[in-house]
Image 1 (tube, rainbow, N blue to C red):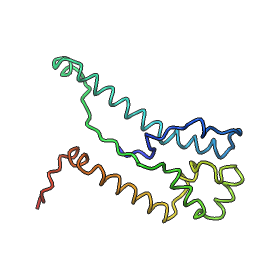
Image 2: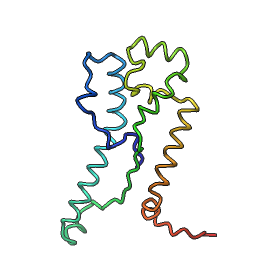
Image 3: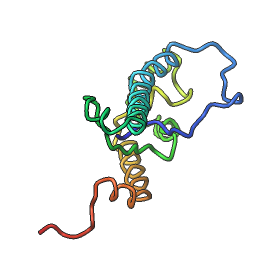
Image 4: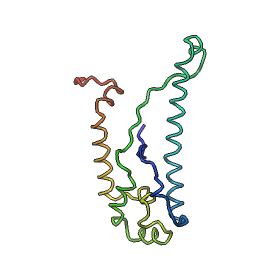
Length: 152
């Protein structure tokens, strides 16, 4: 599974807003909930089922339709909102005006991270994914049971 949220990023009280949320803030959070919370909940549910299966006897596991699922969660090492904020000015003018109108311009970068398909931003995401995966290359190889030998 490839997530888009840095699971280690936690909001602190310093990051808590002092003003009421704008429509743009709410829209960004809604997209975040739709795309990330479901993935995280599904992953946690799968891990709980796998753990439950290990506690069952072999006979009970054979009677169950449930089977353990191997998984590997890859998540970015950087907060993608920060990457989006760097490239916010690359958005088309009409999108920037819309973002300003709904109160999302230069906020937390959450909405920008979902709306931005600009080459520089996408390139940075690809580079980040590549670097993060290389950093966990041995773990990915083990997950895929790749022995490094050429199959040809």
